Amino acid sequence: MTIPAGIDTPDIMIDVDILDWNIARMAAAVREKGLALRPHAKTHKIPEIAARQMAAGAAGLTVATIGEAEVFADAGINDIFIAYPLWMSPQKAERLRRLASTATIAVGVDSAAGATKLGSCLGEAAGSVSVLVEIDSGHHRSGVGPDAAAAVAEAASRAGLKIAGVFTFPGHSYAPGMPAAAAAQEQQALLEAAKSLAAAGFEAARRSGGSTPTALLTERSAATEVRPGVYVFGDAQQLELGRCAAEDIALTVAATVVSHHQTLPDAPARFIIDAGSKILGSDRPAWASGFGRLIDHPDARITALSEHHATVEWPDSRTLPPIGDRLRVIPNHVCLAINLVDDVAVTSNGALVDRWAVAARGKNK
Image (cartoon, rainbow, N blue to C red; front, side, top):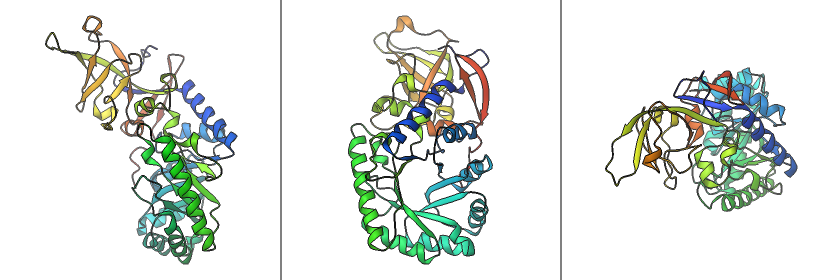
């Protein structure tokens, strides 16, 4: 596909036809499993995309911060889960109270101290916010062991909060060969945590899991909902993990060849494009083949990034694209790329049809 003439580089482009297909496909697959879909909107940060997800049947949205929740609540989303163990301050508590007065709000907790602080800061409004206890299912970031879920729930209950259930993030699924194992660990952890809550007299009505690599592997026997985010766009990580194909990639970065790098005769051909870390992001897992991929040239690799330069290693010096050529780049981690721009170009059938503001960009608290 050619880059529309109305787009200058570097710029993020979203193919709305592929986007809509990705949204519809995930919604149908999750619905067929009997699960609720609560997409993580930190990936796109764009109200127009959230509206499409809700129209396709999403139960609500997941976000990472109160700021993101405020943006989407203002856009009309009335059921939001802040999947993060927030530590309350008076300022955060006031904002959370305002949110809970206009939308159904749930928050993550993973410690008795955090739950107590949350309830204390919310005061009389504590009962208007539900909490889900975060469980560590193998990622070893935040979250408690499944057998410790009841103690956190008890502290939350004493603080006046409503216990809605448990959740986990199987982030260790983002590695080759790991999605199936991570999904199995996720399911076991959710079941064990639900039993822990039941033994303490709490019902884990919501058991929430599912990253993009594991969402379609999550079973209803353990979970009630999944929270994938990257699926709307796809990225180079998901491509190399085999969780999407090139035709599923809805977001690319339009870039221009700006320099040819002189190399020795026996060295790989290289050139420079005008899309560096300040639009692609700089994530590169140890297993990734480069700092991004060229969607129309699968044998090329981005071997180095500067802030405004990307070095592309090209397989054949005889076909090196000329300076001024325009190419489409798939970022490694799309969540980082989208947070680096104020707006995005929306395309359909190769034409520029709209621009969308990245309204929740920078809403980090």
